[in-house]
Image 1: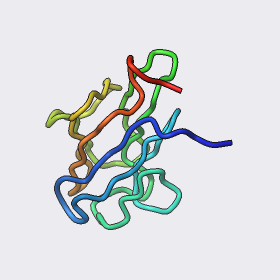
Image 2: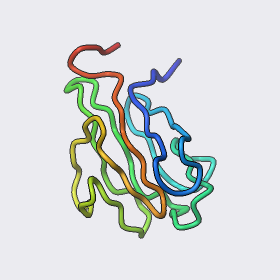
Image 3: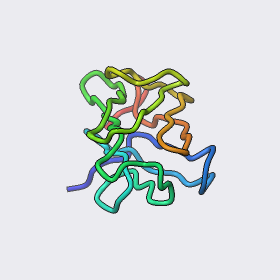
Image 4: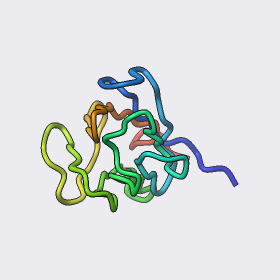
Length: 112
């Protein structure tokens, strides 16, 4: 079936400002290639192996960001991402030369 949209990442700094990426239920990979859910192919500083993963936990109605298998540093609200962290509205995820702001659709007030 259909993977429902649960949130979005919007590029706010770097190439392609204003581009948005839907975040679906379960895991969403961030990398530089067509096989990634959040395809940042315009940013050559992004790893081809994938730099991060955003996961929507439908039971807890929460979003989390974790490191992917790439070798690049990823930042969450200007702090180096070393362990999984909860992501909330207007949080900033930075990978390569791209900064993205997160917005949720699913939360305590609405879910599928």
